Length: 375
Image (cartoon, rainbow, N blue to C red; front, side, top):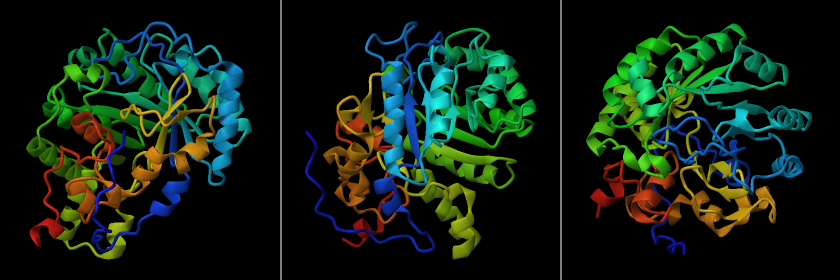
């Protein structure tokens, strides 16, 4: 059962930031579809707890096409569809479903696993079918570090090989990197490695203790803050955009640094560190599992409904769970009255993991809101 809304009213907003909260309440930026749970890897932080074979209740091909029709109900501009898993390459109808999405005008990206199936020919087919972007995971600067996280030898070599092929094919690339105790000291080396590659975005995923990720140790609050400040410093010289996943408090850290540097409001609004400001689990993001369950995010495993029985747009806009996530004033604790709540809002997935309510405070942030200091 969801907790009651917080009694706190609207918080003071940081100056110089415009918010798209109204837009994200009616239309997500990204729809993540776990097209299958099947995967040949055994990643230590896998949210999906992927298995060698598909879930027996996986959406059929026709149900998948019907789900694509539901995405159209969001209207223009349509959200980006991101095919994930498991390993999307394990789905027998992958390319037909990509065609179905492109025929409907839905932009499509994909995050394949680094297995033997990820060949140059596969990447050529993905490009020919109109895939807009490719997501690859790199959790270490060297083979021994990356492969220890992924659970299968050879994944580092296959990832770097796929990165080179995608660059040659001019497919836009996002690289995703885990941030946890096991990887934090290696992040500068990963940054140096990627700085020599042709990628468009580096997204650092701050561990959420769900699925297999429970066996890994997250950073402390102090360590996370130091990493976020380092990320901001890197963003000044990086040849690609640097972003965070499940660490929206990075936006607060970045804004504080911009103020220290004396940036004006226009410079702040244009700064790449604040792209996607206001996006959080269930608000700008929606996740659909391989069996059709609709959740705020892959790392927030609370189903609001199922696309087999309900319409995706209706769930995203009107389901009680999503309506609460659209309104940060309903959050509890510090996140409920923080002046950065519209910019950040905290990780709802981490709040749920820690407190068993998605409305709780994000324990990775210890910022004391100005309103609390005035009490």
